[in-house]
Length: 164
Image (cartoon, rainbow, N blue to C red; front, side, top):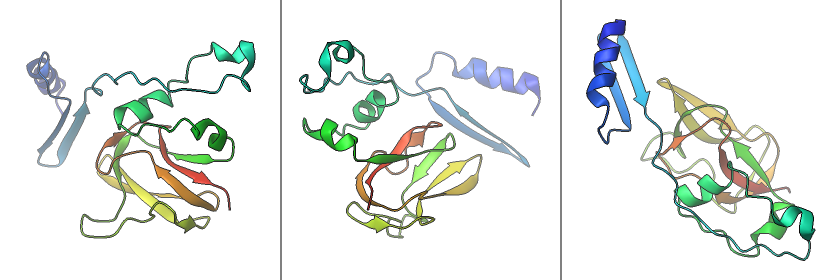
């Protein structure tokens, strides 16, 4: 794509509410994403007895707070105890998250299902390529952290599992 065309497109979009644009012209394609809306602030209650004074003042890591806030999945107060026994599967790409192969197909894995190592969990579309994300270890799906069809960032947690 011509650099001048790209500059013109970016200048035209500046100051608008557009957050994503896909442009296809012949063999060329351009997919622009201008970030996400600012996440809402979520306050979670945490038991202080086990944390101690040194860790009580530490903020929640940025990789955890936006997932809970941006997708409106409030965490129950008992969740911190469970987090020590769970693991997450994270996105290896920036792209669009899909729970199934097509809109008519069932999800690859539903909450409560036990998955095996190597089982397909979802698809992340990145640069028009459909990338299957597989389970690296067996586990029971406890929570889907991302809504179907929503954009995901590199390293963003997609699923929470408990080991089996």
